[in-house]
Image 1 (cartoon, rainbow, N blue to C red):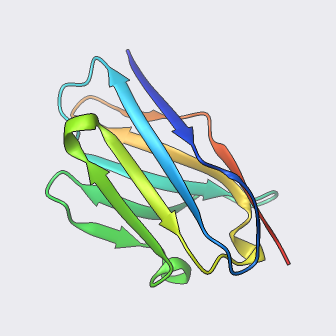
Image 2: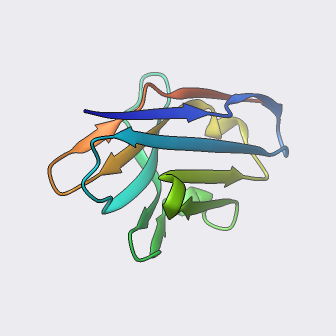
Length: 115
């Protein structure tokens, strides 16, 4: 069994910054990719950023230039540095960890950006 735990969410004013962390533990064969998703009230969950085993990254268009995903492979940890936050970034942020067998999800961490 694999556990994924996010941390670092909170309330921040527009223009501020937050850093999210995600730690995966348990019976992990090998991690193919780790990613951050978000879901705002009344909206579908969307991919925010992803980083592969090789270090390649992808970002949702609205966060390019503001968010940075990084990874500590030895610690099975992924980070999301968020800067220049906007009210529309308000959502529950979920971390996912994909190995050859499945994709595992955390419980989510709330990010609220006030205007």
